[in-house]
Image (cartoon, rainbow, N blue to C red; front, side, top):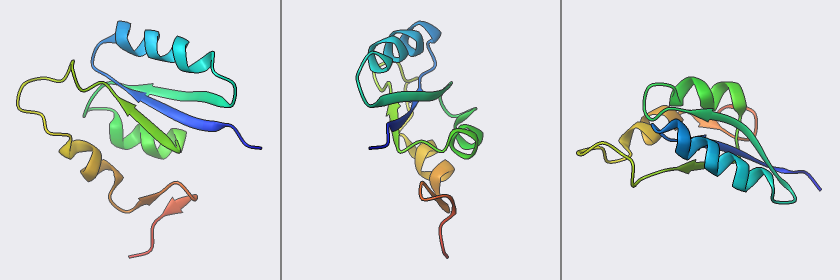
Length: 85
């Protein structure tokens, strides 16, 4: 069975490190990358090809709605490459 590929997205480096340690300790779970919110998300999706994105919402700046994840993931598929249009 393949491991679950996880990308962690958080502005706070301490939150990213803590989540990475917690998730990495779980059998079948591999943290493939980490990114700061918004700024690194689009490139991180392309580079790390995660199956799951864990996003720290509590640390988000006021007014953020998660739209960056939708914009960054548009046209992308975890199956390997761009989704058909």
